[in-house]
Image 1 (tube, one colour):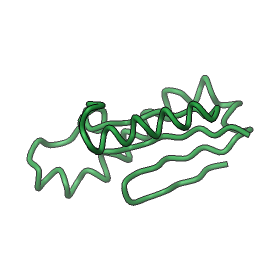
Image 2 (spheres, rainbow, N blue to C red):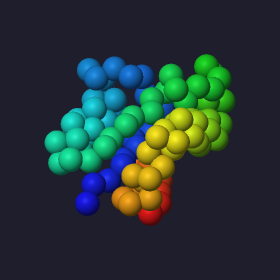
Image 3 (cartoon, rainbow, N blue to C red):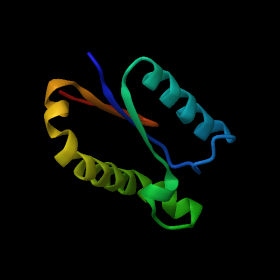
Image 4 (cartoon, rainbow, N blue to C red):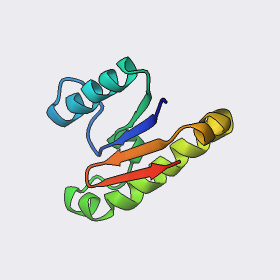
Length: 98
C-alpha cells in the first residue's frame, strides 16, 4: 500500500535550514519507500509578515494552503486517493483520510 503524505510547515523552502531540511529529508525517505510526498512551506502558506500576528493566524492560513493544494491535485488523483490513505502532517497535528 502506498500513502500520499503532505508535510506542512511555516518555514522557508531552503533545504539547508534546520526545520526545512528535516522536511526535505522526510520527503526523500517517503519517496524512497514508494510513497507520494509533497511539502507546503511558508511561501505557499502566505499570511502577514509580522511574526506575532503570523503566529496567531498561521494555522488558518496553513489550512487554506492545504485545501488549495488538495483542490489542485484532487481532480487528477481523485481515484488514487480513494484507494490509499492520505496524510497531512503539520507541526502539531496529524490528519488521516482514507
